[in-house]
Length: 102
Image 1 (cartoon, rainbow, N blue to C red):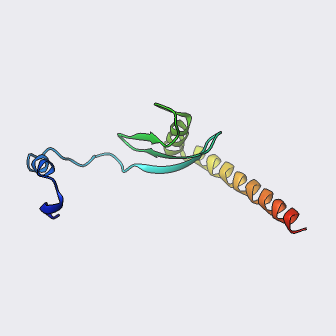
Image 2: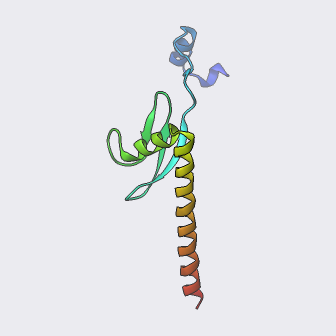
Image 3: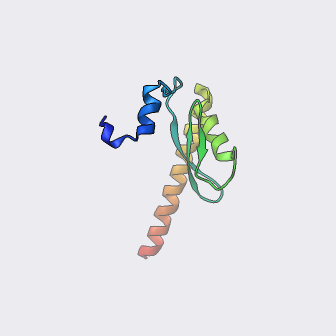
């Protein structure tokens, strides 16, 4: 780290031992398809953020947290549902392209 790109205040904070890495698990990034758009959700031991316009805990954060904390059986059901959704979306796209080609 070059001290020429770090401000004097940042250097002082570092020198005083006032920075420590989070001991928790690293945050996870999720993409959540909401009712009104697709949102990026970051959850971790000390962070919960969503790119939606809601303030505070939203359903997108709650859904991502449920995914991250699901049991093996619950996660299997979620993966199955995701696969079914992707298959439906692929079929709908194929139908649309077939209509456009005719």
